View 1 (tube, rainbow, N blue to C red):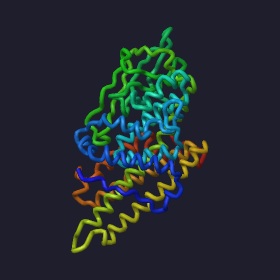
View 2: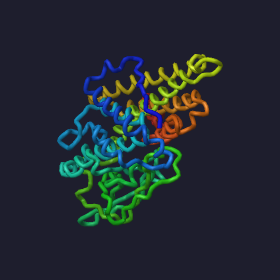
View 3: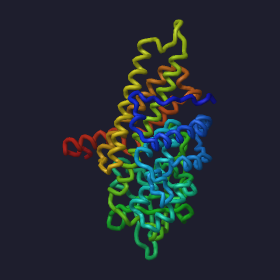
View 4: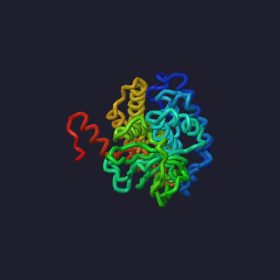
Length: 392
């Protein structure tokens, strides 16, 4: 494995806008990725296996619930710090960032925001340290962009609930200790339940043969008359807005994370273009290569500014679902286009595991679809600016 020589591009001196704490948090995550992710990630992606030994390191750099208060085991950081951690982790690999995003925004966030005090104390400290790992069950075999049509249901069975149904494309499910599952009650109202591994009738088969997110564990959640204690119902919020609020937090993290993947592809392409000799000079001297590189750094810079301003709005409690949606859509699309251009700069070498670009490209093909597809996010913006929803 080649040494990780990554140097982060900062064309508009964004470091001047970050606090010292922001930079300390980011640099700690960056060094961890260089030390613990870069040397192993290609081999794990090649064999389609999640490197479980990194979970402790993710916890140590504050990647699990960084914005959760210290009272519950979190780091008590702000939203920009959370974004920077996601950026650095995805610079290493989107699948590793997915694991952290799910744990933070889709498991810890709903328990903290919608859970009881007893649930917060029981689960959050162990989730923060990685002693417990979680997953999030919303998407179903027949319901992706239309989660309100979900078929997973639960009913009151006296001293417990009885849960039946299935969820699909669930990150972390094969090894998760708990699942935050969204299901309809007997009145058709969506509510969240904490389902624990070991409950009778609960299984998590793994999804195989993926060409994308190969170093991430993906699977299903199957519920066959699972008895869920009534104490495991999230009491703070019901309706579709509850899981969608979690997705806002996850999409925000993705908007930052995608920048990391783009940065890595750009840095790789720039370094290669300066070293690769053709016609007696480095290919960086040719106009078409400079065009590619100049456009890459321009788009990265725009995405950085978009994410930073969104982080400010998140810190102020002013960021809207629609603003988060725009940033997720723009930044992932940007990263995927940069990965494709960077691959061309490297020519045939770009398809090999000696470089990270093709892995990033394949990963981003999933990132552009999950947490809301590219097209659905476009329609969210369209509905916001016209006042006319076009989803049906």
